[in-house]
Length: 611
Ligand code: F6R
Image (cartoon, rainbow, N blue to C red; front, side):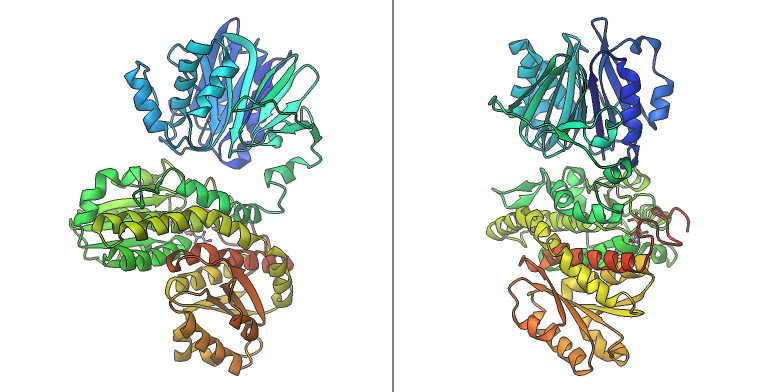
């Protein structure tokens, strides 16, 4: 995810900025840059690649500056490139800005500003904000006021830091939905998106809250709300060590990423829901929409966790958009002479965008004339570049090898695609569309609620840590969740686990059931609930021990299951976004109890770029 660092004081700013950026490298990024103000001029240097590449090319005249801002970018709008790297600057080259987050209404702001004569140079959402600040500066002649007024016009999430050659010893910073911390030194101040960037300089910090803005210069700082009300802030001391900070205070990246899901689901949804029309807007599919609507059928192809997301997508798209969908392992698709042609749309799902089999499947589909669309997390990755269009997840870098937050974002993106196509094809009516939009909007809160059961999951994990085999059963939308839950456990705890459609159990796996084969049932109150209850009875009759992932209002299940993990009620097709979360936690805690390395499980790589 993107990182911000800023400095104002008496010391040379550049080494402080570069050191801060290096400490943010663990978050993942694709480009970096710095801006300083020196001798009445704004100087900017930015580049795709690593912080060390940026540092190597910085001209000497940056060295005298005692004020500056720096950034590591993880692309969301516009590919990773020198131009799209931050800081971004205004038409006059006097104001520079770094930004984490997404400006949802950047397109509208950009059109308005372009009509007023502003010239844009990048494909980013951020550039709209710096030109907007420039516009307000012309009126207010005060950087703090200009930034504040510009932010009143912005929808979306931001953590920003801004400098201007017009006010050569002031940094203005603000946040909404993207963290920002101030570091308090002696006659010097720091700003960072993450304390890791500044704790080698000071451990005295002030955390900005959403909707707050600060002006810092060597004599002090003033905090206000964006609406211009005064706010008093408390100075706190950071006691965490660097490694703990990198993992957000969690023991592992996987746990941090599991906990990020309310936010990452929201980031996938951000700016894409249209409440009034009851539909979704997906800019990356706009040019393909006619071809998608004309298609005879869809093929979804992917590997591993992404393939499981594809299976849920198949159920969603067939039910709501009434389009025939087949889902294939990318590794099979590429070698079996698939029947695919110009009237097909092939969807490629990939977190990394670099998986060799998925990339090969994409090339195979293209060679046969199909329209290709990506559902990808890493912006500018090979799959994102080579598809005809697509949808980004905006889930931020996933560092833990076992995929967690990318999966729930893939499901969220698939639900947006389903909603959009259902509305366009008329298979979802306006009222139903609005009900879906409403439910999607409150999904992040519901995910937050699921995470509150961590303690219960820990207790269950302790009970089952020495078991050697697990069975995961689900039906309908939650059959792929059974597969994914089992995969998570296998990957990080090395316990053998199998996922099955619940009703298939009686066709074979039931022979395995005894006290030593716990069964995880994923059984929210959806259309298949009653049927799954019968399957549960079958397991009980054979003395199997049962863990259920069930609806928060389901009392019946308490009688049947040995352990119950609850999920808030939601629409059937959205249940997998919630039901997978306790299973991620279960796999995590069982693996921890067994002493496994969850972030780097044996034999696995984060991105499988070989066949
Ligand atoms: C499982 C996991 C893998 C990946 C698979 C595809 O936790 O991470 O199964 O899902 O290798 O990777 P992407 O999505 O990057 O194409």
